[in-house]
Image 1 (tube, rainbow, N blue to C red):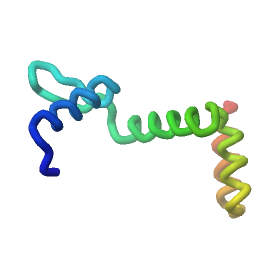
Image 2 (cartoon, rainbow, N blue to C red):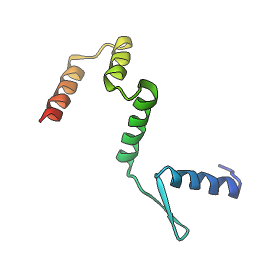
Image 3 (tube, rainbow, N blue to C red):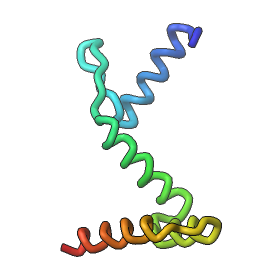
Length: 84
């Protein structure tokens, strides 16, 4: 990125503070795998944009986009699996 050394260290420090990376004896490694990171990002988005309400997010989404029968069936199957 062409960053200064101090900028890079600050960025890594922030990622460690946010629980994404860990720094042990100057060895930086990932705490979350890709799926866990995306899940956390999604949860943070729903919390910030919709006050944590998944139904509100879905309502906002489907007002502007029509779901296909296959998408509806997939969502229904996810809900049924969750109930079990």
